[in-house]
Image 1 (cartoon, rainbow, N blue to C red):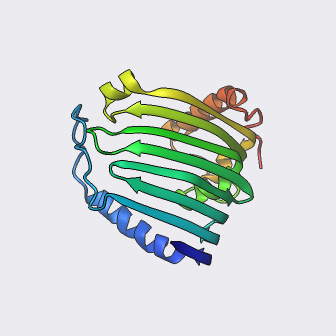
Image 2 (cartoon, rainbow, N blue to C red; image 1 turned 90 degrees about the vertical axis):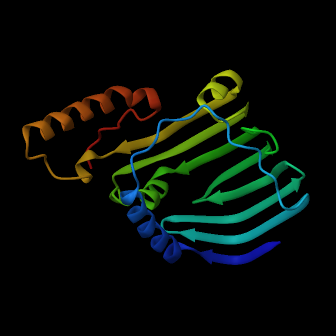
Length: 212
């Protein structure tokens, strides 16, 4: 059982993030994707459970409260129910039911969010995004069931629904950098602005190009 009134992992995440960037830079070129499913996982324990109750959790710009998690391992089956928390004022719930005892695994996943603020998420995990450049609230309802994780298995077995929308969204390109100095840079910015202005209404951000 894990219980805490408050946790702030920002200093540790900053150290990990810097080390991860150095490791990524040293990695060789990725190999082509394989259609061989990963082997079944054999757990060292047959039955186990984990209960988590944390009052407050902080990671850079993300503030999470009321974290409640109940996870169980029963032979090869892993279930997480409930998983609930409040992220920057928005409710998040999820469930997981997975069988890791077969090659490629089987899984049944669900996620529901209520108006999660985009800016804290993006500025926390993408440090190059300036504060105030992206605004909006995301709502998601995801339910996915499948077997296997390779391309062929996903095409054959993956089922479910994914509903995602953004409200009150604004992207301010002027916040990312100054005016491009080369002709190619200016062309790229013009094309990007045009594409965003076209798709903005379709994804729920009609004023996506609103100036600051």
